[in-house]
Length: 352
Image 1: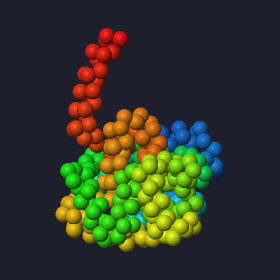
Image 2: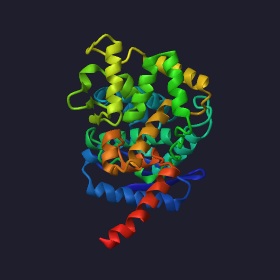
Image 3: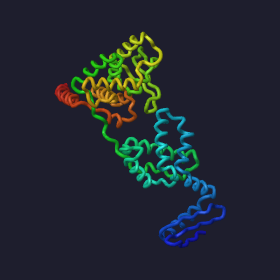
Image 4: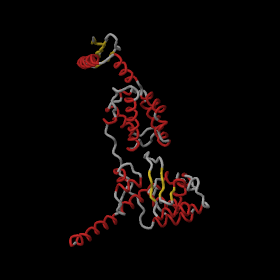
C-alpha cells in the first residue's frame, strides 16, 4: 500500500488505498519515512474513509479561516467590550499566523508564537505583556474547543494547555498615603464637587471606573442600601452594598441634579472625568495614583476591617481569590495592629 522512494536528498512516501484519500509526505531520512508510513497504514486500517477525509479537512483549515468563522458565529454572543478586544487580537493573529493550518499549530510551534509576541514589533513597540499574551492564548483555546465540538474536527489537538503561560506581574501596590486623600478631595471640591463625590464613591465601594461611570439611577436601591451591577467585566452581575458615606455621595449627587432619578448618575463622561482626575492629581502634587488604584485602596480597606475574604470578593467582583490577592495590599500598620490585638487577647482568653 505504501511506496517509499528516494528523490534527490529526500525520501518520499506515497500511500494509496481504494476509497481513501491519497497521502504523501517527504522526509530527510528513510527511517523517518518508514516510521511515518507504518503509522499511517495503521491509522487507515482503523478508520473509515469519511473519518480520514474529515482529518484532512482539519489539517487544511487555516487559522485565518477559523478566525473568520469564529468572528461570524461566536463573537456576536459576547459582550461589546470583549468583542472589541478579541477583534483586535484576531486581526493580529490573521496578519502574523493566518496562513498556518490549525493542525500545524503544535505545542512547540505555539511556544515559538508566544516568544514572537514577547518581542518588539511594528504593531507592538515593546512587545506584548503577560496579560495580553494570556488573552491571546485564551482566545485560541476557545477557538480549538469550538472547532473540536461544533465544527466537526474532533481530531484536532488544542495546543494551548501544552505551553507554559507567562507569569503575571505582581499587582500594583500604590495606595493613598499620608494626607493624600484629604489633598485630593480638597482639590476635586474646588474644581467640581461632583468629581470629589466620584472619588469618594470609588474609595467607599471598590467599584471599577467603568461601573461607576456607567451607573444609572434605576440600579440604585436606597431602601436596601445597594447598587445592582449587571453584566460586569467578569461576565457576572453583582450587588454592591453601600456604606453610609457612599450613599451620602449619591444623595448629594441627586440633589445636585435637582432630584432626578432617571438616566445616568454622573454628568461627567468617562473621558471627561479621567482628564479632570489627572488634572486634580497634578494640582494636589500627587504622583502615580491612577483611578484604578482607588479600587485597590477600597479593597485593601475592606480586608483591613476584618471582613472574610469571600465577602470581600463578593463585594469587589474579583473572579478568583488569587486575583483578589494580587490587588489587595494591607498596610503594615494594619498588620501590626492585628498581631498586637491577638497578643492582647490571649491572656484574657486563657483565663476564661
